Image (cartoon, rainbow, N blue to C red; front, side, top):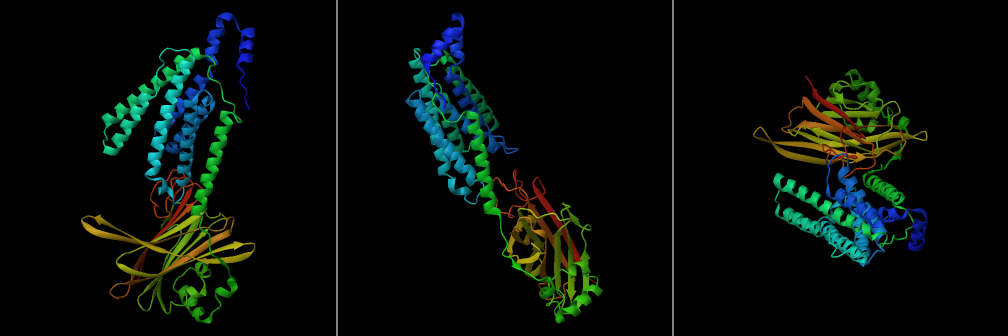
Length: 471
């Protein structure tokens, strides 16, 4: 805790400083100047928006904290500084709440009222700051000190009007930036005029100095946001123990099917991992088409997989997509799969099974899919994309994460299906913070600075692209 004793400080200065330099040094130690400099720096950081490297979140957060710390120093100076400190605290709370909501599905809760509340608090802060500086000047004996923030309040009002009317042009933008720079200089000069106040404005007692408090706030905020993001995106599996020796290669009715699949070219290494119950509905097999890892897969070395399509005697195609994490590499915090198929065919009975090892036991979980579609114009024709998506999270540090997906394909007119299209994309999120929030993997093609899905920092993407063709 700091303790500012003006009488002791004055006696110390008289004893240690030459008389000719006393007035100059009193101006240097003026607490008002340092605090206002901090406030001005915060105002600049909360006004300028840089939409890259997360600076659109980092700069305003640091800026509002600097404003609060500056007003905290001045809050004992006069009533207006105290009110300015309280409004800065309110703005800090609104900013913190907004940042936490930004990583959750409740991001829209502050739409509308949050923006207007923030603008109202900001204008009140500017008013109290200007009145506080003006009152400090009167207390210091200045004649007609200026109210320095009124141009900024006017600038803020014009900015709100421009936003409401939708006026947007380079000329307006350049003018507003020029006006802002002029106003910041105006505030700084008004604060500099108060050097003659010496230490008339007392420094408020605090428990923690500015730098540790700023770093602590940022660290706690980052932890809360990361935890909230992980909480809303982590999708645990509803898994059950599975004895592989009792689920694979045991049923007599599938033994003949397995032999026929191997004779047609179905990879035995994959077939030995597929449960009997997912082979029982194949019946008689006519042909097998295999796409191996590396033939038409891409994007990551963490995963490998197969796409195997089986043509049955009744003219339908069943596709098996097997995947696994190789070399003991673990899955992401959140994984997703997007299976896209041809809209001109009928795709049914999409199933997924995930497997992993934990404490020497095998666990199995089924995957629930949601179908999506998109209609768009393609060279004058209306085209529709259809796909099924799912997201899931393997347990932390689960061994041998793997699994497979299956579905049936047939022609709409009932004729034999001699081909089948498959584009399976796995997206593996490895960063716990997704800012801003997206419904994963709905926006799989959207670039997210701190997370999201796609082949960018903190993510893995594995794609299997296959078109099975039969004679």
